[in-house]
Image (cartoon, rainbow, N blue to C red):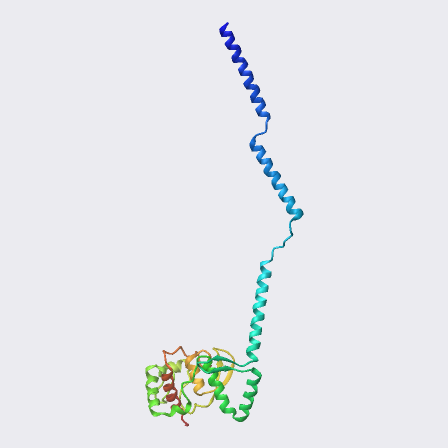
Length: 256
């Protein structure tokens, strides 16, 4: 009887436990509640943003870049216009100043009418100086015997003689092969035909200090017509040495 009573209580407890489990399975879990609340919050936020939010349009990066370029270009054009129509200081140390282009043209025409030859030499010298081709001295200074003697020595040490024949009795083998111009006869101040660049169009130039300087500093710019190759870059030479070479080469120019 005692055993039967214990079995009865155990059976009753089992039934109650199963009923509780069934009841718990019917209740929603806390995770489900939280997920539902999150979804509801997101839907509500989207609805509020759609109904009351301010519509914005993102600015195109391309539009912003184009606008910046246009503004910069406008600034450069304005600066150019001001520079071309006003006076100013370009380089105080070198005493270089700016003047309106209209006034500059008037001054050039006036000075050309007064002395066109002198103005032409001045303009050539200024152009070459701006290009880093400053002419080494005035041609009047090239008649100095000491300078000519120094130039003759440099003509040998800088191996100019291998391509440019300076003595009718002494050949320049490399010059003959490449058809390089020689320094024989009367050539200084005379016109000669050159290619503008290797194989470029033909133009006439005058053999003077400016042409000689350019030929040494930038041998590829003008190549004598008929030469098979431009002069190779020379060994380093400073302005004083160039002036001496100028004096010597000029002294070689003599009437036959």
